[in-house]
Length: 358
Image 1 (tube, one colour):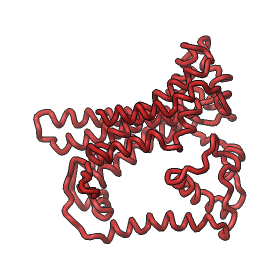
Image 2 (cartoon, helix red, strand yellow):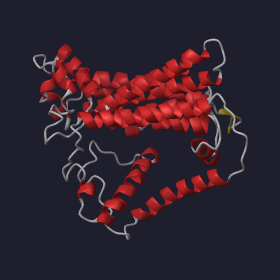
Image 3 (tube, one colour):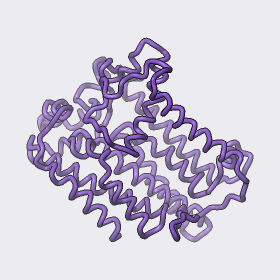
């Protein structure tokens, strides 16, 4: 608990200077001119409008459905109207809570002690979070992260109780934590669309951290060639809930995909297949590099913030090849590595003498 409190204090302290900041860029459209924040507008409009206050079924809608984030803006407006400090304060508080949850999850992976402290401090201070915490509209990311981690922690607890399913109360509590995980996953998606990916992360945690399976063993389990009914049931519940959430999301948008302008998504709007392919392959590489070396940040990554990769001669393709080549090597290692009898653990990687041991 002391580790979580320390990391939270650092997270709060680093962003207190944003309380004096004003609104900027997308804040104007999402907050200052958004009719859904006004008291005279029925709060139920939030359920039918996109993040910018446009009806979801309207042809000009951005289709960004984030009602929980918009409701938090409405709460801010009800308390202090359009004074920016309150909006920034809630962003900072949410960042502190997310840091505490991330540190708690790090404890699950690494055990207590120095490593979980370092992980929490790195998360609290990483420059890549600046846009999300300092910009008010970035609250969608912070809120989604909050419920993302809550969902993941609930699923971690579910895995632990599933192992002790035969105990007196393990069974009922096991599925209670699963329900909590599913509910938080839905809430994360309603803060920002990407929150639904926590279901996939939970499945990966179950297979490769908690079960300690190699890639080949996981494939055999998923193909039904290795029997573990409880694990398969958990994974089926995650997959089914994911399909249900995505289907509901598509239905609520009027069964129409979003229509982005060229400035919002220039890669998708490019007429050349090669340009679209090379650019979309490069974008994950660019984002991964920001985690390792956040030397170039931006308040908005649309337009030409990341120049299109237009030809095979572009030197950035070398980074793309190295990035995906690394994943291929990891996959081959998982498939060809020595088999060992898989066993459930408590999901922790204990660190002793500088080495991580399971």
